[in-house]
Picture (spheres, rainbow, N blue to C red):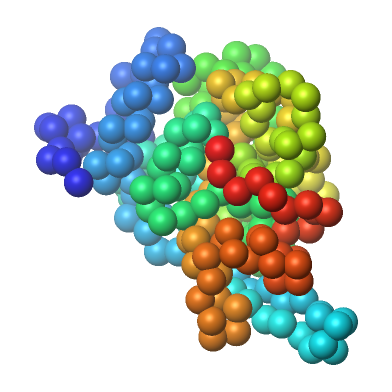
Length: 247
């Protein structure tokens, strides 16, 4: 890990957004890249939460139980006292996930996180300047106003950038897949969607990190091996195909 600069030692969520208010996407992501990879994320994000899942194997007539770990909130920059959630392109999100031995969630993982979340909040759509940094920060503040310092696994506040085989069947190049933003009745606002190019980022996008290790019973497996398994893939994927692993 590289040595931090003075800015990197003192960055907070509010100061980051103040600095990037007029940045273009590339400039904003370049700064976020260097800051996050040098450790400028709130400590609470490092305490991952366990998600328990199970499937019934009809061939062998047995229940298969597994678990994995996810960040308790969406990727943020700053400190515990002053942090801000940060929408990112899938390319940078993947780079950061790789650096932390993580991957981006599937639709099923997003649903399972929502089902097991302790803090579920009503989505708050915005309509103006959706891809601007000030709107990103304003939306973060709206979420914090809703949260009222409640702690625990949180869900319902963002659409997830996800991995999905849907991207393999879209003839248009350079896609991102998003999904989620569950309402309080458990229904997602956003179905699996590949309508955006992969450089488009707006305030509603969130980056949830999932540890690559999936515990199937007492066996540790990499998520790619689980997704390639004809039976076990159903633990973390609910699509007909589960063959897209990485942006």
